[in-house]
Image (cartoon, rainbow, N blue to C red):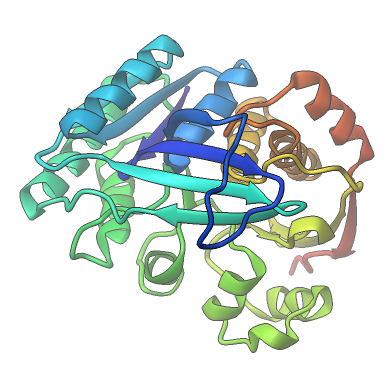
Length: 323
């Protein structure tokens, strides 16, 4: 079973406008309203993939109640913790031939007490459900602790007796602390090229497939599996010491929101199915791309996933030298 963790869920509003004009009255015919947050999107994608999944999240106020009702209507397996402040909204405008503009609220401030209770909740859930063997930690938390996810990772490694596969999808300071300032390591991370450059003190303007491959080759990371997303240019991956270049087909994007979350869902689902490294990468990329073909977030067509899977090339670039 896969446990997803979302500590800053949102109610997502998605608008499509052919010609968006700043400062003018813009109308849309196809508004989409649905619960989001990276782990919620990941859970939804996992449900489309027929995975055995359970979602943990935190909800507060009227927005939190609305999110819960929407998720119940989706039949999403859910454990939620009540928090004191109102859950957030997020707004995405797709306009002018595929441009994506977002307005995202910071979200409710999570108190120190609530933050500690959340970690206790997660440990109790994992220890109480022996079928959970994969945990995905998705997105942000709005509290005053940049090391919070390091604390959660540490708690999972030290307080769960069995070996868990831990997938972490964070950004900025949280990601940097997980990679560079943690005793324990997750099993998988998914930085984009800008985040990768920040992690390894590279010039983001000079980053390329070649420079990423070079940095992954020379860096001895404690994290065994890293997928560096390059958007429409595919990806570079380092799995089990081997480095791969990922080439993807060209597609017509409808809505890219949630594609990274669907990629994480693909990784978790493929690991649960005992896929080999190359097929984990292909399946993850296929899921992320399949989501971009849909208006909804974390929405997938299995036919699209299977078709894209066959079109994705994963080429070994550098093989681990075993001593």
